[in-house]
Image: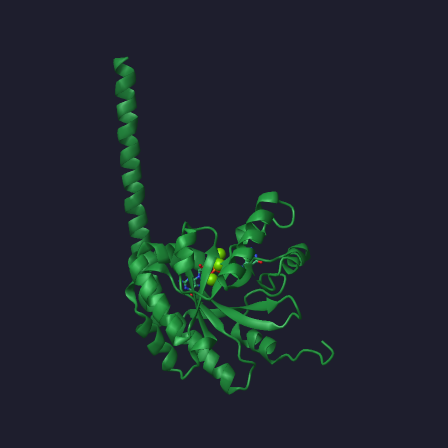
Length: 287
Ligand code: C2E
Ligand code: MG
Ligand code: MG
Ligand code: MG
């Protein structure tokens, strides 16, 4: 029994040392990547791609979501899933997030000046960015491009709101007063309660794509998605379905009165040069 205990202790100790080493390793990786990210911003290696939000009623373009891309020389395009968590961890997300908002506003201004159809452009705001900025900070960036506030939308997650509820409620309330649209992103995956949702000054719920994936086969997803749509209607919020890839999903959503979708079925994220052709395209007269 003694030797068994000794062995357990030893392996526990080794496991501890292993986790410690893992953490140190991760910290080192994050620090190195943080340096790369900072020079990438200075060297203009970030780009925004734009994914259309489309109405299922007439397939008209109703908005864009700006999605960050890192074009690292020799490494190709690196997806935000790989570097946003690091930027969030190190704090670099604050200047990076400011850049994203500024760049989306600059692009929106350019499109409006070229006479394109005015549709809102949405920008993702990470939890740490939200915590470190006021509504005035966001407003200042939007104003500096002379944009009508309703043509910019901020997407935040439930987690970002819950991390510092008082601050988030104050910022979102002020943004709403200013006419800036706010969407709850990945809705259904966080843990905000219905009572918070009722108090949350937002304009839109975006149904997370993990629920859309099971439509129209899975009973649970059918229930969840139709409930979120019904709830949005009761609360007077717009609702957008994310990750719509199949016609069957679009048909289900249309039947349940969710007419705004974003997904591969109606358009992948594209470079600005391609996005502008979507804005310029006129619907056929008979449509
Ligand atoms: P998100 O805000 O929920 O953005 C939607 C993600 O789903 C995008 O991935 C988009 O390309 C992907 N997507 C859209 N339609 C479909 C579909 O039909 N099927 C599938 N499988 N995927 C689809 P992406 O561009 O890789 O971005 C991932 C996440 O990274 C975003 O999720 C967002 O949380 C974050 N992110 C992207 N850009 C920014 C940014 O500028 N700032 C911050 N803070 N986060 C960003
Ligand atoms: Mg988003
Ligand atoms: Mg989302
Ligand atoms: Mg998502």
